[in-house]
Length: 410
Image (tube, rainbow, N blue to C red; front, side, top):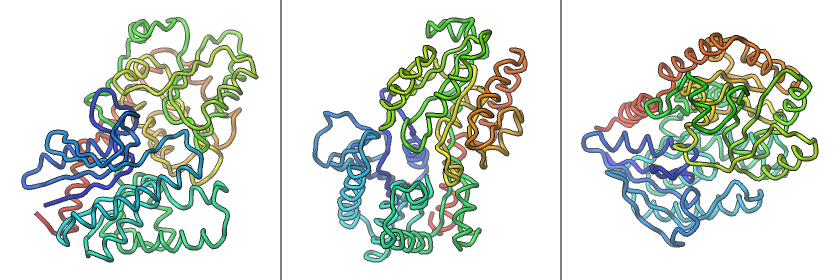
């Protein structure tokens, strides 16, 4: 069986890479199956800036990776991103058109939305079968955030969305919230399978000796470490963390620092906001490889997740949510959504009202004021949750079996 894995943001499986490595992990697991050939088609998004500006083939064990000359960065503005999406869609379509046969399988992982358009065009022109993975609900996210406003474009995008869904062999949604949104659009529930973003629990492990863990990163052991590790963009709503810090500063007996580790097109604005408010307990660190991030995850007392106050963003399947759980962290979100059901398994204290900064801050304080043994107990339940539901090896096999069964191939 030949599977082409189309993913514009493929993250190479090496020690210097950072960010979401779901596609690399899945491709590796699938390639280890008997009589399976995996070829990834991607862009230069997660490759070095000195990467050759031409189509390049790499090999990671049994996985062939074709990198097309398309750049991408979280610092890009909306127009530059759209150009990157269109360029990648154009180049990937013609590359796959020249490589695929009718019997091959395409696994198309969005975002961007244009990935689905490529899959649809290949089905129409070659007759291939494709599986569509929804990493975010597009085009709803940019439309409901007011980024796309032209009524004709919106109508076209929604029309294309339904075409992409209806012509796919199956839809893989990265959260229950995403599945519900797609079902509400009229797609049969049985055509959609939830397969969470997940995490690597073999690599990401907790260290419940917080003194030892904090010493490893030279962090004061008498301070609480609150960690936000991820993209700092418009949708991420990191302004809420600034508001939380202002509230925490009023508690004279609370010694804490918030580490924001990540980049994005709102990073400078959030830093400027922090300086303007005179906040001394927020530390900004550029994105770092996951191997270097692990000590910070282990040293943290609490993992923070924020999103801007748009209901559609509650469907997200943020990478950091699963990594926090794997490292045994209590998790606090500033929104509701499908994660709430899982977090209730750990502790009802971890849920905050959507778009309510005071409530968010109060939940943070409640978690920090618990006895250390209580926070450890919450952390242990977080780890159990990650192992039981979100281990990437298991998730990868589930999708592979789904492809085999649905496409009726061996």
